[in-house]
Image 1 (tube, rainbow, N blue to C red):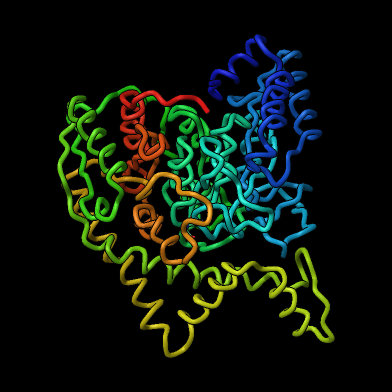
Image 2: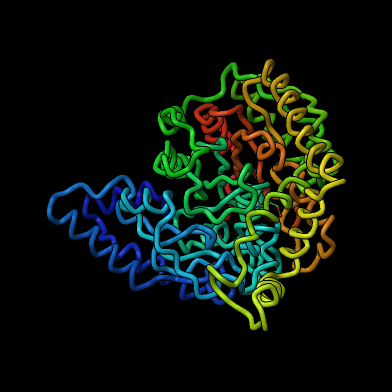
Length: 476
Ligand code: GLN
């Protein structure tokens, strides 16, 4: 497996050209993309042109950046200039943003080559990538199983060797859960660490952009590239971002790690087993590992599934057939608006808009939306007390390994996939999913490392240690 770091240095030191590297990945795409369906769009021509430019820059002796010539796959809810951005929804069909998301721009300036746009659950609502208007993405490790979601295309692209790195967005777990199910690394940064400018909004108080990678060090490099203040996002943190790469091999000696007991409840045996193995590995590395209770996480899922749809119902009001994408026929404007939305949105999106509108409606606001916001405060307090005695917390990323298509057809069963991931979104803390061992059917298990706000340095340090102790996984 080629790391992004390795590829960038091969290219910088002329062992390979950026075009050769890109062509290798395009070949992998040619062989397996029909089966996997990770991409909504593979942008061959522009990618080849960008790679050739990197080679020219290097040939003339100039610096081409830390990610020189590294292909990167971008979730299709991140705006790319003059390149279709669909959110895997019919309603955005034909829309080409006139600008790049800040994260895309930062990757390009670091020398990365955008290889294509990846599939997702429509508007990032889902946990399996089954809710895409462009068909499901399949898990490269077992094509009968889902890759997780909503960033299933990005996770699958990295796992299948279509790109060494990818970007996703995480509102309630959409980077970490597919990373876990596909056996790659996925990071949800501290809220505000990475700019949301150009990320199509789902639930603005939760949404964060983050990397997928084959290893923790690559994820650190990508996060370092995209993190940092952006005046175009009013929620962007103005202080300098934490440094990540320099502490990766510092070990875990003396660190206090808490295993969140509530997040082991209802989790499949095979996943729990790997968590205990991880805890033992941390202990062997000198960490002090014990159980910690965070009672408020019990309400996390309920609070998330009120607030996220509430915010979505407002954010998605802009798709009215006037400004973006498709337009259905109607004899007057209101009829056209309604017809466009009915035809343009899939069932899950419509369900969320209805739930959200209901939760915000007069007479129900206090009972639902208002109460869910109080759960956020409660969750913050409970986590603060846990962090008073622990440096880092640990939990499964997903309650199960990748499940089979159609296996979770009712919404509640699907929503339960997010139990372990939503708490970090509710409070804005960072979390990373690292592969550790396998479970049922030989499918990968992901371990989640949680840290307090802007605690990414230590989070990556622990994640890197866990990775170094993990049983080796077969390549796909
Ligand atoms: N699965 C969660 C949902 O459906 C999270 C989605 C996300 O993080 N974008 O809302």
